[in-house]
Amino acid sequence: MDKVMQELGKSLTDQDVNSLAAQHFESQQDLENKWSNELKQSTAIQKQEYQEWVIKLHQDLKNPNNSSLRPVEKS
Image (cartoon, rainbow, N blue to C red):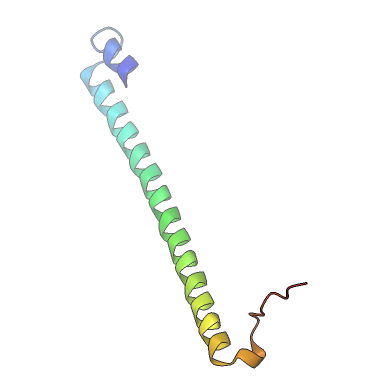
C-alpha cells in the first residue's frame, strides 16, 4: 500500500488506489477469518479431548481395579 500511495497522481488515480485498498482490505479480512476459524476449531478439539480425559480419569479413580492408572513400581 505504501508503494501504491507513492504512485498516486503519477501512474495511479484515486479510483485505482481505492480499488486496490478495497482488495487489500478484503484479503486481510479473509486471512483474519481463516485464522479465526482455525483457532476456534483447534480450541474445540482441545476442549473435547480434555473433557474426555477428565471423564476417563474420573472413571479410573472411581474404579481403581480397572484403572489405566497404575502405580510406578520401585525396583
